[in-house]
Length: 206
Image 1 (tube, one colour):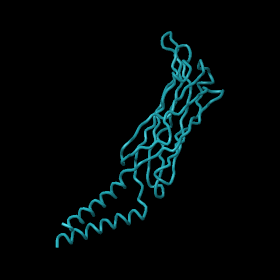
Image 2 (cartoon, rainbow, N blue to C red; image 1 turned 90 degrees about the vertical axis):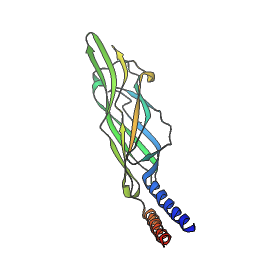
Image 3 (cartoon, rainbow, N blue to C red; image 1 turned 60 degrees about the vertical axis):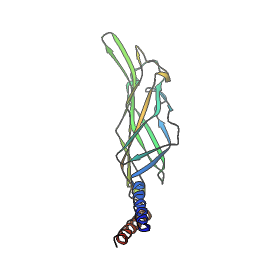
Image 4 (cartoon, rainbow, N blue to C red; image 1 turned 180 degrees about the horizontal axis):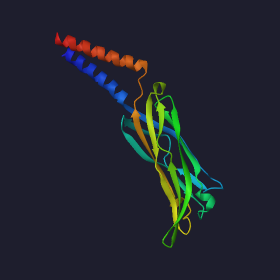
């Protein structure tokens, strides 16, 4: 019975270590939005939606989505200068897993004005360059992919419907693309657990 308990304990240790290697808790420590907030160009405002720090758990291959911030304009019309693309950038800093890591997602904002039959429509637009990879863990061997949602905001006829209540929520999707290579100490523990399991198995057979 003692040998059986030892075998079970060794197996539990190895499985626990494997679980730690495959499942990770991430914490978004803080984030910020840099956008065009003065003329020329479409003048924009933003406010955070997601309180920080914000934690979530992911296994490799899984994704997690959440509202990140609201974007809007207080302008009442799209003029010629508002149609010119202006840069926007969102930086995201993660406090765990240690050491801290992060990165920025870049894009552009601009105003749109056009005609549909006899109706003039106007709105603001934010478009992102694409997903951004950030790296973490031992020597940056782990990878997260950050995607932000393209949005239209403050849609109106013959002018913009200004104000935050007509703005849009930008969503973030975090994908756990690749696990970090464990630290040497973790590998040592895992190796010790495997050796112990093999030893218990041999003694059990005897």
